[in-house]
Amino acid sequence: MSFAVPDSVRPIRDAVHAFMIERVEPAEKVVHQGGEPTAALLRDLQRQAKKEGLWALGHPKELGGGGLPFLDYVYVNEVQGRSELGQLALGTFTLQDSLMLHRYANAAQRERFLVPLVQAEIWPSFAMTEPEVSSSDPTQLRTTAVLDGDEWVINGHKWFTTGADRAAYTTVMCRTEPDAAPHMAFSMILVPTDTPGYVIVRDTPVLGIEGGHCEVRYEDVRVPAQNLLGPRGQGFVIAQERLGPGRIFHCMRWLGQAQRAFDLMCRRLHERTAFGRPLADKQLMRRHVFDSYTEIQAARLLTLNAAHAIDRGEQARVEIGAVKVVAARMLHNVIDRAIQAHGALGLTPDTPLDRMYRHARAGRVYDGPDEVHIDSVGRRILGEYTTGGNWEFGLR
Image (cartoon, rainbow, N blue to C red; front, side, top):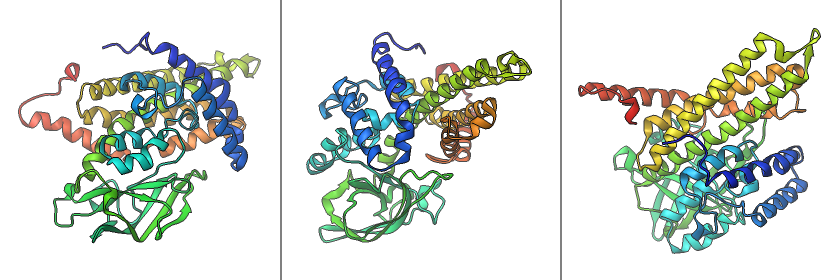
């Protein structure tokens, strides 16, 4: 196993890196303003990405994607993650949903949703979290779906359904088997967002940023029985398959964000002077560089190790849980130091750091808060010792 970027991946990774720095990052301020200029600019970036062979690189070729293997895409995702717009510009924001549909969708679902999804002709959304319950324990979810003839009738309340305000459909986690064991009681159902009873309550701001994280009510929503995704009662199985690789993708993008913040910090330390000397000459500033370097590198190696485990067909729950916590904390810390090095400037929107900082803090909550992953990893490791074993670090 090597942690170096493979020679076969380097050209496409470099091309994506250049696309991000030269075109996507300069577009951020316009896109963040919203409105039609945003949509037009995104469409143009997507057109350029398709023309240059950079579109949907992690999607299977048979779906119209680039067909990069999982591990190769992990390395590309790292540089794509430098900007939150990277996924949108390069057509990879649909990857988790596309792979989920590719595996479980029936013929009608594939034709209606999957093909246009890969080409970014439609947007997906995914509804799991609910405001009334602790979604860290998803067996508590209350949204129900009852089969009435040849239709599912859905009632419930979800929030943080990202992209629901522009999505063509939402994949909804519903309780369909009330008498089954907790982890066999839920199913996934595809709900077109124009279905009567699908009510968007609001765009829920996250630390002051409105980003399409919608609160949605399902009021007697009726959809055909064939909108069930996969078998009944298999919602958690499908979700776990979606979330495992998805967390690796998150962590690699966070590494891209952290490396961008690191670059900004190091350049600032050379450009800014205090008391007649560059900040780069100050020992405390060098400590910021040291701490950030070691945290980025440690998180990167943990992420690649988890990615290799997934690629070998393992569930890698310890590795994924550990890196989800470590990478989210790392991102927050690195951006925090970069802001400190920029002083008052770092608190303003004149650099991307203020927005990056708020997104980084949210990373410690979504896809499972730190506490859940810490407890799960600790429990699994300790479980090895209850049977007289030990944790073999080098064999994982």
